[in-house]
Image (tube, rainbow over all chains, first blue to last red; front, side):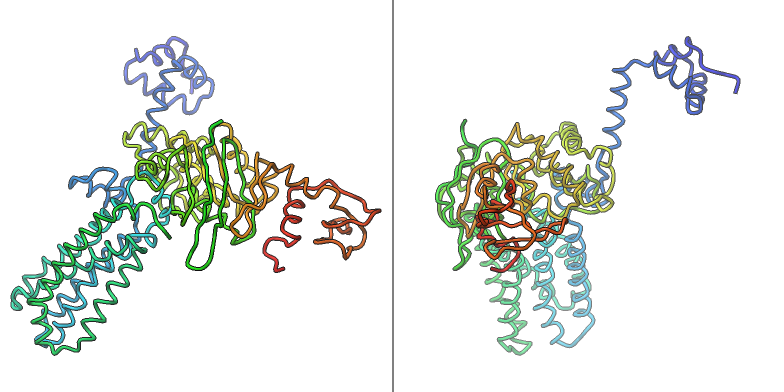
Length: 270
Length: 286
C-alpha cells in the first residue's frame, strides 16, 4: 500500500477533527501498518484513551444476564433478588420438576373416574412444592456457607428462593383446574395443604437444615394420611373440611414461628 | 494495639463430642495459622470466627462486637471475608460474574461501584486476565484465587481461610502464598493448614490445636525451637527417635532424643510440630 498516515492526519484523527471517510481509512490502515499505528498512538491523548479503555472494559465486564434473571427484573424484581433466584440453577431445575410433577398428577387425576386415584393425587400433590422447598438450601447453593456469613439476611434469601420455587408450582397447577372442574372445588383442595407443608418446612428449618425439615414434614404428612387407612370417600371428606382447617392453622402457626425465630436462621447452632 | 478477635473459654459440643474445649485467644493484624491434626477443632474454630456457627459456651468478640447480637453480627459480617474448606463455585459463571454475585450478597448495591470493586479484587489476586473466563475453564489454583477474591470484597479487616492451599501444586501454592501475604499488613488473616511449609513461609503466629484446646501459641520460630537439639541425621534409624524418615541422600532424619554423638540439624516448624504431637505425623495412627 502506498498510502500512509502523516503527522497532520494523525493529529486530526486523534483530536476528532477528521471526516468519517478518512477516519475509516486511518483505522483500517493502522490494523496492518505498525509504523502508522505507533504514530497515531502517540498522537492520541493518554487520559482520553484511558477513559475509553475503562468504559470499554466496564462494558465487556457486564455480567451475562440470563433469561431467568432478565424476566424476573422485567416483572419488577430488583437486580439482587433476580440474581439470588437465578444463581442456583440446580434449584431452578427442581422448580420445573416440581411443576411438572404437580401438573402430571393433576392431569392423571382428571382423566380417571376411579376415586382412589383422585385420593392419591390429593395426598401426593402437596409434596411437589415441598420438594422444591427442600432444595433451596445447601444442596442447591454451592456457596451456602459464604452466603450464610454475608450481611444479606439468610432468611430473606430462603424466602426469595422458596417463593420462586413454590409460586410456579402453585400457579401452573392452579391453571390446570379447568380440566379438573368436574371434581368441583375439591380439585383445589390440595393447595392450602401444599402451602402449609412448604411454610411448615421453612419454620422447622429454624432448628435444622431445610432439607431435613422438608423430609420430616413430607414424611409425617405421608405417614399420617396413608397410616389412617381411610376409605377414599372419608379421605375426600377429610380434605373437604377438617384438613383445610388444620392446614390454615399450620400456615398461621408457621408464619408466627418463622417471625419469632428469625434470628435462628442467621446464626446456626449446628 | 486493640485485638481484632478475642475469645474466652470458647467451647463447641456436637452431642457428646467436644470439638472445642475452652479456647482463649486474642488475634491481631497479621497472618495467624492454625495447625493441628484432623478433628483438632480448626474448622469449627474458623466457622465460629466467621459467624457461620454459634459456640456452645464462652464468648467471642470480633471488632468488639458480639455475633450473638444481631447488630453486632451485622457489624462483623460487613468486615469479614471468608473462604470455607469446601468452597463451591458456580461453574457456569465467569470469574467476574461469580465475584459480582457475592458482592451483591455483601450489599454492594451501586452497580458501577460494585463492578469497580470486583475488578479491584480480581486484580489483587492476579486474575484480571481471565475474569471473563467461565470458572469451569480455570485451573485449581485460579479457582482458589477466585474464592480468595470474593473474600477480599469490601477490603475486610478480618479474613478467615480454611485450608486455602490444600490440593494445589507447588507453583500454585507459591502464587497463593504471595497473594495472601500481601494482605497481612492491612488486616487480620486467620488460616488453617496442614502445610508446615506455608506456616514457616508466611505466618507471623501459629496456634496449634489439639483435641479442641490450644496446645501451642507463638511464632513459627518458637514452634521450630521446641525441636532445638532434637533433630539429627544418621546412617541408620535410631530406636530413640519419635519419628524418622529416609532422606533422598539415603540417610535417616530423626526427631526425638538424640544420642550424644548425633549430627544435629537446624529444626523446622514441622519438627517442632511433630514433637508437640508426640511424633505422630498427620494422618498416621498412634
